[in-house]
Image (cartoon, rainbow, N blue to C red):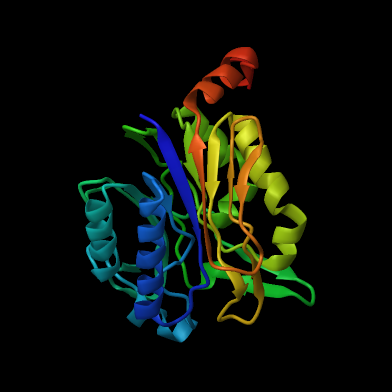
Length: 269
């Protein structure tokens, strides 16, 4: 089956209703242009204060994913619901950062909870401790679909190649990376790391991101990308705009790369 992938770039804030309206509009635009796999960015439905997290968090059967299931059915697409803040029963101070893959029937077929939490101190730029309000997941997730095998990851996971190698070992051919990369780290590392993970694992990387000033007081990088197994950037969004970028994923090219340069087969460790 031919895959036409779309990476959706957004600037989400604490207005969940408006964020969902934006996501629905951009999903519709991608589907209208022929996309059959649409990937939203990290925390696409809500980004707000720690104090508001408990109220904003949802179960996986909550309104955000109900809407995403409806949109997947309506447009007959595979939809990666970037990530949402998933409620943890009995724990109002923490949540999961969770990505959900939905099929064209509106059925959630895979769920991935972000494993690597963003705890950093960049002098004069960004100080954040995601672990203070989130719990890490523990499961590596790769789903068999009619589009191929899809591996799931989220943002900061990009810096941990062992996760991507596990996804490749599970057979991942397409890897989704919904993100909200900060501007300073994105400017320095985003493209090189996305391309490296694609090259190392001879897989397509679909990496949609947030852009612009976020509710936490620092800028995010945008530059949503789709990269092929040879490391070529097929499409790339801007730093400063809401966008949908799209590209066909040529399976024969992936097969050629894996056949002619069989690095995955040649591994010794």
